[in-house]
Length: 112
Image: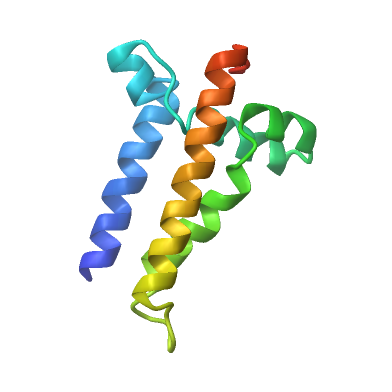
């Protein structure tokens, strides 16, 4: 079995465990919401075509799937992004998530 499939299987198993057992692993351990809290609920809402609820759960949910897909498949791409572009995207996404996190903390706008 290829290592990527093993990693993907482990990731999926851990993700499913936390989705069905806990709301969020950070919340379960530390009692505080994490910057990614609400993304799973956002995708569930989006799959039900309730986009206003999806954005209420987490306004950056639509960024996660393309990024995870790119990271998992970049070795298979004919022309992956160069290191500077990947770094710029990582920094931008990190700043966006931090900004949303701070905003949600200051406004108490985490949805449960």
